[in-house]
Length: 117
Image (cartoon, rainbow, N blue to C red; front, side, top):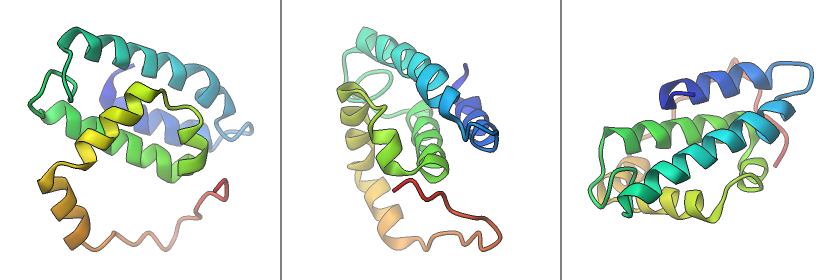
């Protein structure tokens, strides 16, 4: 599964009768395992070492979309310690902190939020 398709796949799966349970239990776990193995090869704080790249921002976007779809509590149950560390590293980048502290959220008033948290 390519990084840029993770969030769209998760979104589509959330709309199915099982509300994405198969995605969470099988496909997401497979994807997390692949990401962790890849990151282990570079042995750094980010996907390809100690310097953030476009890939890190794409993955952050994917995880944030999944958190919206499934709720942070549900996703945290599926995260590994490596993914939690990785997300912490990306979210602590000064530019990311500044962005989230100073950019108003986009309002999607026509969507229903998940109730899993």
